[in-house]
Image (cartoon, rainbow, N blue to C red; front, side, top):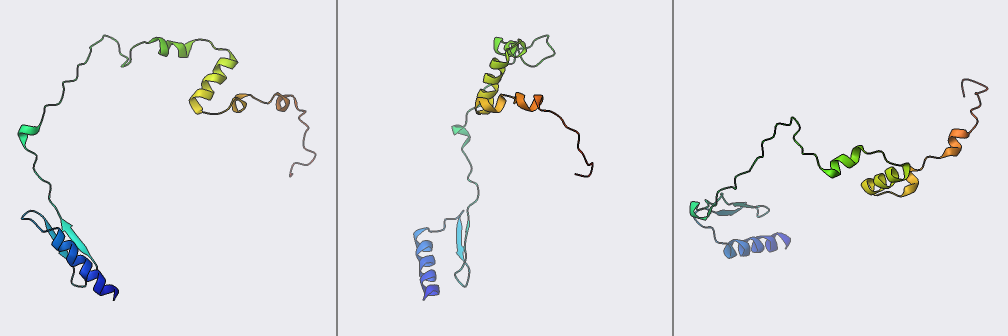
Length: 117
């Protein structure tokens, strides 16, 4: 029943999409596989446009980037709060990620009583 339905469906698909001289649609003998071949169509030259020319500005600088105020702001001294704010904006995290825990620094470092623990 299912195979008969599949064969009828493939016949319907084949009659709906007639093969042209360039395109071919073929069904295997058992009707399990439909193979379609459609080669690349040529695009008429009249419909094409040339690529725009890239205008390059030649400078004497070795660097490929130009100095902008945004670029200079990276090298300015910043307060810890400004640095945290910038890191929060870049990484989309909360401020708590960038606050170090001072209690860990002040914690007493006791030597281990046994080396193997």
